[in-house]
Image (cartoon, rainbow, N blue to C red; front, side, top):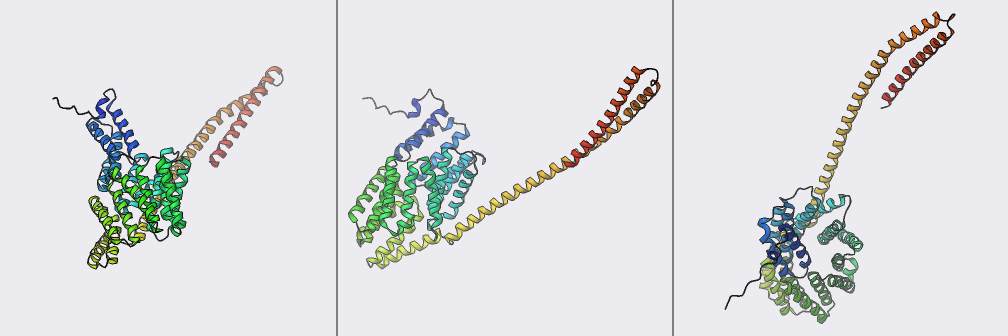
Length: 458
């Protein structure tokens, strides 16, 4: 019995295409499966890896590294690996390449954000916004990138005491996504408003309405990751309204999608929300079981920010059960992570980074003004030099022409005197020569005065 032949990778079935074209085609496939098929995404990236040794185009190499960075944080939850890939890509392009530079800033900001390093995330987001705002003509991709950066910055600001800045950023993103008619963008914004809009904070039903809008757009966009997130949020809010059956129904939908995607961070979020719903309804044993499932997953991907929140909940649940030993243990873990994440006041750290960016911008503007002053000074010096040279030329030209004109005038007068009585025709000719000479003399003087006046004006 002959061994079964293994199917060759898709890349090997396209010999008629150039290697670069094959890679570009595979990258396009990646963008089509990002949202709903992590396994297929990994398979395509494996095919691209087979082509890498033959790819010499630095721009294409950069695109591949960024695609891998997206996969690492979105599908694997490995933020540090994503950061390493971004920094590797950074060596392949110049800072003047706005498209790549913006992608780099957005990815770096997202990874630091998800790792809980907010003071590192904000400068990347704001620099990306600055680059795109300063760009002259923007295409659809530019507007989409700008909206994403506004959206991410809005999420970053949700931990500030003043929520207005967060809502302002999200609403800027919502405005752009509405113009672009971007279902994925609208879904993310409605999801964020469900979390942070003042009305949603005061009324759980309003929050659910935002989340349902988000779920609708996620489903239409076939974004399974986003749909799972919206289901999580809807379930959690129903739990806060004590509608446990509705809550667990949406949360189980979310968990099923995340298991299908193999998304550990998402699975942990679903378990966490299930635990929260059960906890709020005093079902502490069931809540702790779900929290511990989330803890196992979050430790695997080293997501400190989520672990920080989880440990706080576990401590409270054990305290409700009067298991103070475990409550104290988890509280100590909570404090330890809090110290690591919030090494100094969060709001202060963000304001410091914002101030740094403002100072950098002012320094750039001052340097630009100084450069303009130097250029203006050089121009004035050149203009003065040209004026002096022109004055000298006018003086030399007028001086050199005076003597010949005087001679012509003198000879004309002599001719006129000599032929006054006997040669009428010659007299007329001489008179004409004399008049022409005098006109020439007057024109020369006028020309000299005109040039001098123009030079003085300049």
